[in-house]
Image (cartoon, rainbow, N blue to C red; front, top):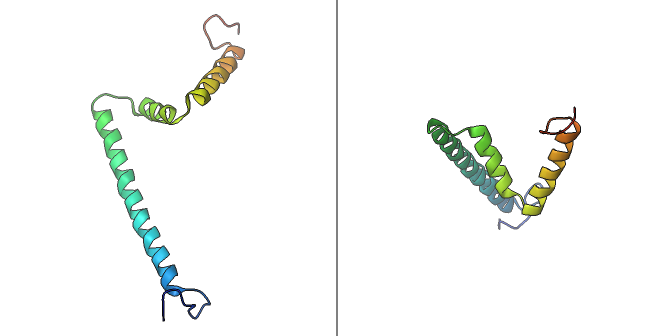
Length: 90
C-alpha cells in the first residue's frame, strides 16, 4: 500500500504515521530546549541574578516598543489611581 493510499480507516496511514513521528520528534526537541532554558535560568540564579526579573526582561524584549510603552502608561495610570506612585494621592 502506498503512503497516500487510503488505509482501512479511509485515510493515508503512511502519511498519518509520518505526521505523528514528526510531532513526537518536535515534542522531544521542545522538552530538550525547555530543559536547557531551565539550566540557563539556574545558572543565572547561581550568579546572583533575580530569575523573576530576568523572566520579565525576556518578556519585555519580545514586545514591540509601542506595545511596551502603552502597557507602561496604563500601569502608571492604574498605580496613580491607587495612590501607589510617588506624589499621587491615596
